[in-house]
Amino acid sequence: MSRRLVIVAGAPATGKTTLARELGESLELPVISKDDIKEALAAPFPTGDLDWSRQLGVAAYSVLFTVAHHVLAGGQGLILESNFRCGISEPPLRALAALAPTVLIVCRTPVSRERFAERAARGRHRVHIDSAVLEEWTGDDSVFQIDIGTPRLVVETTKGYEPDFERIVTFTRDASVPER
Image 1: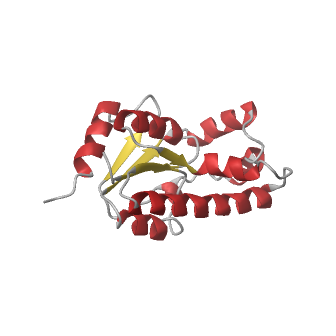
Image 2 (image 1 turned 135 degrees about the vertical axis):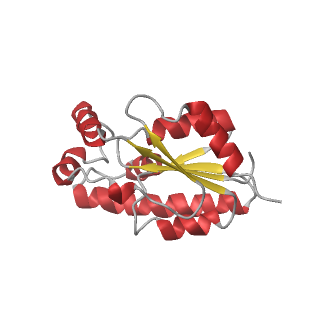
């Protein structure tokens, strides 16, 4: 599975991170998650407000895209996971897709806002100002349904995965094989 890019996208609380990690293990590819980077960047700084969190998010995306570029340019493959947004994320993702065979997996569920509220109530890393995000969230997940012109699979995550995990793995392997 060398030199291929798997992008796992979707709204918050749609199961992206869980799916990306399972795929990483199955495909023997490293997983780079924007939230992991954002949390690491926040470590030396005091907690801030929603604007502070968003600025860290912008920095995390810059790191994510730079690291992914170097990994792919070096001939290796990887999985990128985040809540990539329409109109913002497509240009850098297309640039990465030009470096290696790429597939896009978009996670979707009609209960993402409810899941996010439950996660916010449990608490997460201090860098995520979930209560403020929840106040703004209208429930419109269409902004997270990106398409970058590569093979794309939409995965319903309300009750497990539909299609099932094996079909997702097969799609990832088959669709990201370069044509000869």
